Amino acid sequence: MFELDKIVRANIGRLRPYSSARDEFSGTASIYLDANENPYGSPLSQDFHRYPDPHQLALKKKISAIKGLPEQNIFLGNGSDEAIDILYRIFCAPGVDNVIICPPTYGMYEVSANINDIAVKNISLLPSFDLDVDQILTAQDGRTKLLFICSPNNPTGNSIHKEDIEFLIKKFNGIVVIDEAYINYSHQHSCIPLLTEYPNVVILQTFSKAWGLAGIRLGMAFASADIIYLMNKVKPPYNISENTQQLALQSLDNIEIVNKRIRETVQQRNKLALDLETLSIVQKVYPSDANFLLVRVLDAPATYAYLVSQGIIVRDRSRLQLCENCLRITVGTSKENEDLIYHLKTYSA
Ligand SMILES: *Cc1c(COP(=O)(O)O)cnc(C)c1O
Image 1 (tube, protein in one colour):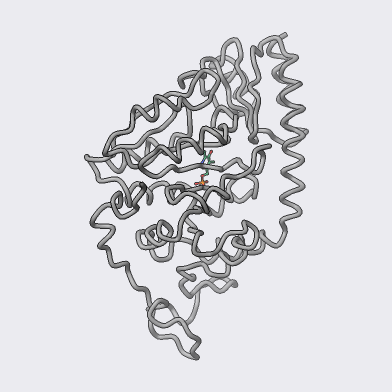
Image 2 (spheres, rainbow, N blue to C red):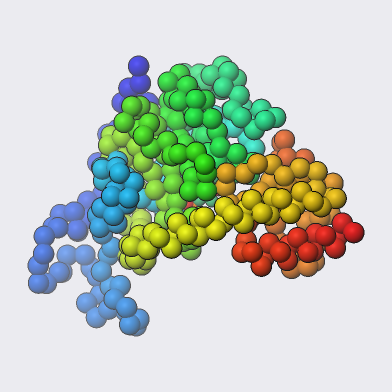
């Protein structure tokens, strides 16, 4: 049986979090002289001289309504990347514990492991880009704390089978982290409903992709109240800036615009896939549930270099395992995609 207390690092279990001025007095007053803020304000016209809400309550309230999840199950980070780093720091003792990652996948899981001095067990995806469930379970040992599953997966674009995810959640002794950065583009539903059934799940989502807010740095983690409590203990007190909180609040009031653009991107993705398939240099366009396509060409480095010379930047992923001669192409606007196809046609002719 999964017991959270057994897998949390002892120092984190014991940790008493920093208590901010706003934690110690959270009512309303007429004069605030408790946080060493500047009473005159900044040279900007907008007012930023107060520290932001360390608990981001207004923002969590809105996200809670949209996601159908209580606020106590929501953590907000400076991008998903902060949530990933915090999970390492809560659960993985440097030089002692290990995690399982399934490449080819998002690079930050491994970089964050290296930063935190955590060993990585790489269990490659199958050639179909599905999880190698048996190998993952064989690889876990008494010190394996986290298993990262990215669905839809970056850079392959496919969603991971729900049955595989749920099977692993049941069998894995640590925390299963499901990264849903691209879930809004997927035909598969979010794993959020699994949270009510399983205590060892963390789901990551982000404002960087479908919400079009990569620049404000805002990521979400959904998990049991006990895990979210630990994440809040470990995070820097004011990890989400006032600016970010305000802009995210405004965006959440405009969800129809976001949904319209998601539908547009999915249409463009499907059209781009068909157009790419007509090109002689294209060997395979992998099915995608995300806002990018993994495309196998005859010579990825040469195609990449040609596109750069034409002012078009894609991602050369050909050095990753199972991605030989593959480019990862983000779906652009219809004009951008047409230009891309035009240049690739010229190149293949
Ligand atoms: C883009 C991406 C993210 C987003 O990271 P942020 O730090 O929230 O911008 C997370 N996971 C994957 C797999 C991604 O591709």
